[in-house]
Length: 193
Image 1 (cartoon, one colour):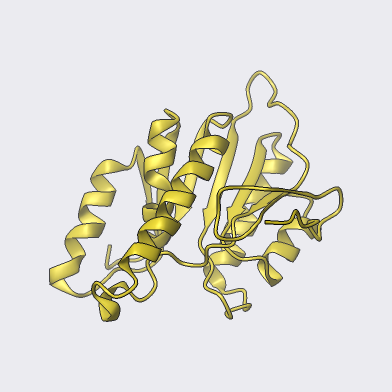
Image 2: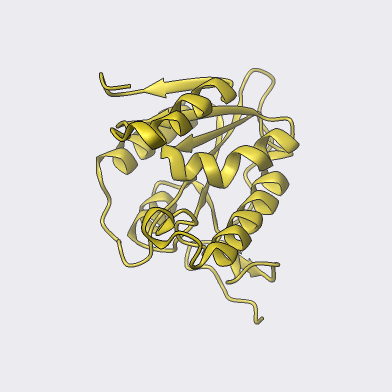
């Protein structure tokens, strides 16, 4: 696997144990005595370059935290327009090009299960590596939870789950309930949650 250069300013690539190359920008500086370091995890689907309200809200939150002196970084699963926006905002970005490891789970059943599990393992390894140097891992949506919870907890980081909508199917809603209980803190933005 060849190294690739990141498109962000100061970015550099590194070879990893991933299906694609993990592109990493320069590491943020160490937090001050009263500041926190926060790693946001944003799962992005391949071919969907649009930036939706949830991503815009996450970007606004990250900017506000950085302006208050906190160290903010991102792990995204797709190098796309959202990644470009994060870099324009001056935020540290790691790109782990695995897409959404949970995509196709409902309709695919066991088909592709090995690939999904391999992508989840890639995410767990990378989150664990990054989370060892942060105070909080902040995951958006259930895909972010599945991609990052194990790595964050193995690194002994605090874990925040941020949901903006609820799954309305009773047979799978228990996943959300379990995730709420497993997270150290939960941000719920919908009355349905």
